[in-house]
Length: 69
Image 1 (cartoon, rainbow, N blue to C red):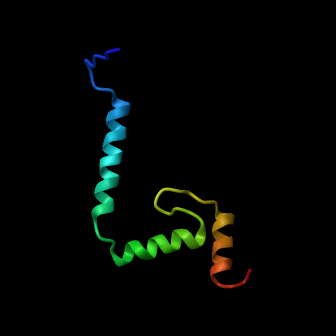
Image 2 (image 1 turned 180 degrees about the horizontal axis):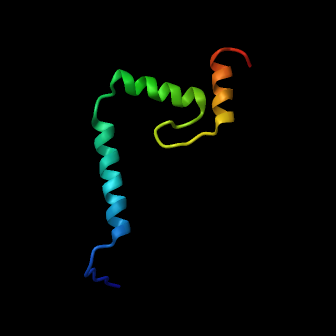
Image 3 (image 1 turned 135 degrees about the horizontal axis):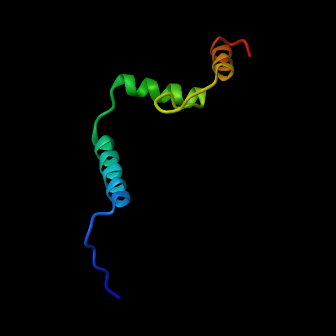
């Protein structure tokens, strides 16, 4: 069976560009700020670079960071 591609698929193009950017970012050395941000994300259980949190959840994070909980 043969397939003929006569136009660009936007979904596949986006997937390819995302994968290429990911590979590029993996090849770059980490800065101290990046290491700290990753540690924060792991400790709090949230991704501050793309995830929104509620006020109540933020208060819980603050309490845990101060050792009150």
